[in-house]
Image (tube, rainbow, N blue to C red; front, side, top):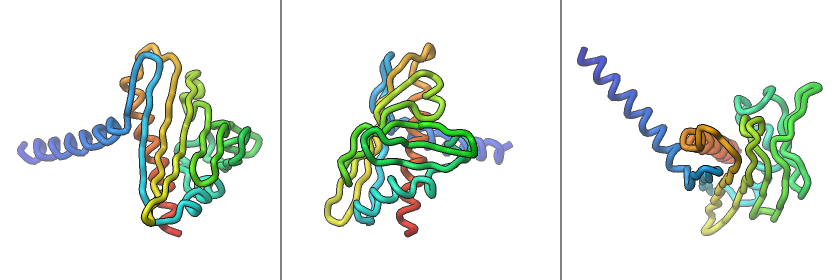
Length: 175
């Protein structure tokens, strides 16, 4: 019995740290939407990080966050597409609306299930380099209507954004 209780506390501690980390990324929630933000730092130069985001997205984007485990691409120009293709299928995950090379890549739309829920948002990839450290801040401002409210959804989106951003970090640090 004691072992089961200790295991239960260990599982609860892991679960709580997981929820806490996801909740930390939530910056704002109201009845119209939410804002989540995640950040990474790396010793890789900003140009290399930018290139990995825009040119190598198919190599690092988590395939379990896709429609068909397809091929991803980002066309980093205003009007460009963050798209996924697989055989005769294609999806525009987001539309590129602003590009300031090595500083800001802004996308507009609803990622994943948010698209089908009629939610849209601005996804900002902000890049800063200081003292040999590159910081990437990923901020997603989502708005729409959810009859259940956004209290449960926002931390999940924050967690998924964190997974995606950390996949980029892992990719660039392996190069």
